[in-house]
Image (cartoon, rainbow, N blue to C red; front, side):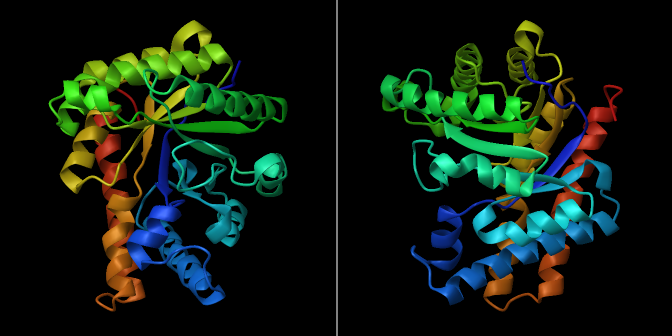
Length: 308
């Protein structure tokens, strides 16, 4: 059984790779050294925004970054040295099937950085491709077992993309799928993974519009004695208003301990810096403002239920 994590957890995630390279820079791998340096520098800019946020009142004891080793190794080391929470992605990017980014060497890479959390992103629909789910589960059980054996906390980012029949059932409306079908599918996925032996300390969950759905997800995370497992909300690149609604809804539910909101925090500021529309200081300040806003929204909503 996992040890869990229940402290407040406010993450600025920027471990995006394939979508970031192609969407922000229009780069296609393999990158030239100059392209690699440019991407790495842009991630340093996001980290600078995180650092500014700490100077503006974001609680350092509960704040952290989620970044990839490829473009953020030095940032992981610096954040850890300064006492920040760190999370490092272990999945390969740009694939619908979970594969370790560094294959059988995944453990050595985690050990080299010793992050607060090893984070894995997985697309898993319990009514989807059974063979795909089985292959992914086998790798996830391996990762989970290694983390438990080495006292390494595991963060699981669960995405449940609609199958074609599910989307058809929703009339082709992705928002209707999110509201009416995805919450139950997320619960089924969590329970199937738990039953297989996958034991995250924190579940990173796509935003939910209804309190009762947040409660169901916490119940799944806590089932069978897993009461110390935390849940956090991810931003999905949604607009500010939508992210704010998701955070406020989840924060009022015991068991949701925080968030990880990335693209909504950094995408426009980084794009403006890259195009020359914003200085580095201005872009970092805007990232800090976004991150601080999410902390304030979450903390205010949590306080209404007597939680800090």
